[in-house]
Length: 71
Image (cartoon, rainbow, N blue to C red):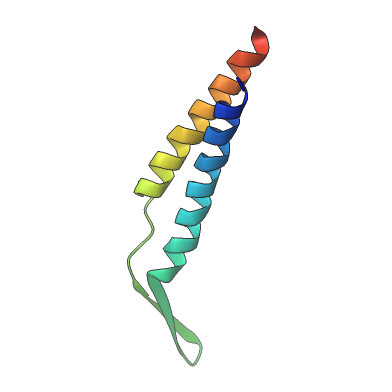
């Protein structure tokens, strides 16, 4: 039971980051005009809420998992 919470946090964090990566493609579109490509839509940001929340959950899970192994 002690390892269940850190593992769940780690998996949830990675899942949130993965979801954020999938969502970033939905906000952009590409128009091809011959040999020229134009990309329209929102630009990707490293400070997306998905990356921040997912990173915090994944880091907390990793820290708890590593600290639990030391005891």
